[in-house]
Amino acid sequence: MMNNTKHQFHRLIKKIAMSRVKGLYVYMFFKNKTMNDVQSETGISRQTLSAWKKGQNVSFSNLEKIAERYHVKTTSLMDGKTMIEELIKNEPDNIIRGVYGEYLAEYNYLEEAHACNLVAS
Image 1 (cartoon, rainbow, N blue to C red):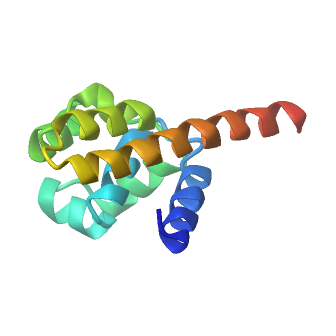
Image 2 (cartoon, rainbow, N blue to C red; image 1 turned 180 degrees about the horizontal axis):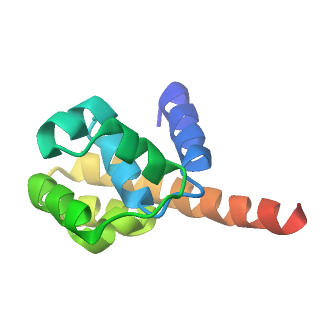
């Protein structure tokens, strides 16, 4: 993992800590998608996506729309770890799978560290 990309990943995990659709933002990170991209590809507004990032409720119909568009499971959109595991499973390139595996380990570590920080607060 390159340091800058790793740093961006750390920032992302911290930003989505309250989100109910962590997997969506993990997917966007790996596929280099912005909220503008998701809006234009799914019709879901940036405001809605931003609200989701902050932990507001998510409609199942919108999740289904995103899952269909990006060919991922709806449940993967809700959990970052599950999303990375799905990306690994569906990636034909061994090298990219390996990189995803590194991120999976990093994600697990960050989730654990963040949970500890919340308890300590």
